[in-house]
Image (cartoon, rainbow, N blue to C red; front, side):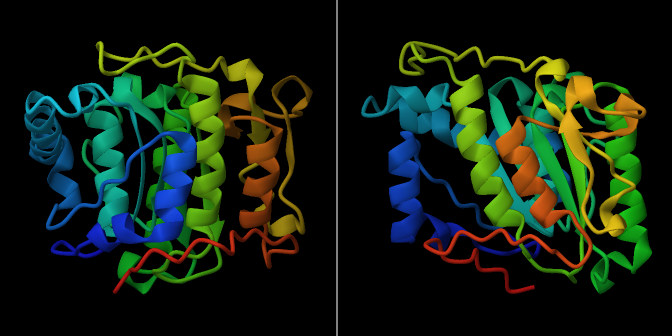
Length: 265
């Protein structure tokens, strides 16, 4: 949720989102009054503690072990980053949008294996102009140097969702298919998610977004410094990413049947 005291529980009541989650075999969770910068230190433990308590009631024992995919804007972007670092072994994928910051300042090793996209707005006044872009670029480039399965989008927007949720939905579907074992049963214990070899993915030239069409290529065909390029799961995610990550957006990405996530900020 956006804002330190925001509320995203209405997200779980949206019938389109319920249908989307049901098709994937997932449930929905919305947070209220979580401070993103504190999630890594204590917020995630509160959330997972609640799931464990629900699991002990006996109706849904799987809640103690379910993997998760996570999205958030603003304070929610910091929340997203915190959850991925607090429980990377359970994180399928993430999109952190217009984040106000993040803890820990250096991502843990396990979080680097989680496919993710960090998105920022060029004209985000709450991020003090270019400061937000610079911080996000530094975070992603340093993580990529360590082999992170992450990429960066600089979108022509302010402090808003833009097309971040559209990209997230594509990433979410692909990550579940690629990383969640077909025979996994969280009701019986933890799910061992599949790590994705770096060479199975696609790469994006993070410096080419203003060229008219962001340059993407399969890992082995990419020309340039692979460790400095953004990483994307596959061709499907890469082409969707390029629609979001090119100056003036000559390609469009939109999921029309899903309502926008409410962001009062």
